Image (tube, rainbow, N blue to C red):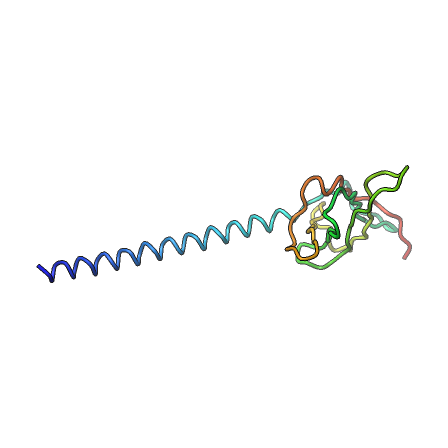
Length: 148
């Protein structure tokens, strides 16, 4: 009788270990999927109307909205190469509330009639995150004449 109880406990223990292992595995998979989903929120894709012609470049114009104190928006390539930063400044009396920043883009960032950018809000003492809708009022691609 005692032998059956001990065998039953061993079986219960191994079943419990299997359940714990499955739960740990599923938790890791879920957290990985959540992290991947959060990472995609900071990537944007902007269509271009036409490829730039000779003597022309494509730049991005970002109109910053309200950002936390001391925060800035880092604009980079999808693989993390910094292109520029955007910050909001308090408006002076008689000026518009938002500030527009223009950032030149390298030619190689244009692929298949679109531009992909990574936008991250960085604030002192906080982890970088994707911008919230009120933090960017507008984002547009513009064509700028350049000389060789």
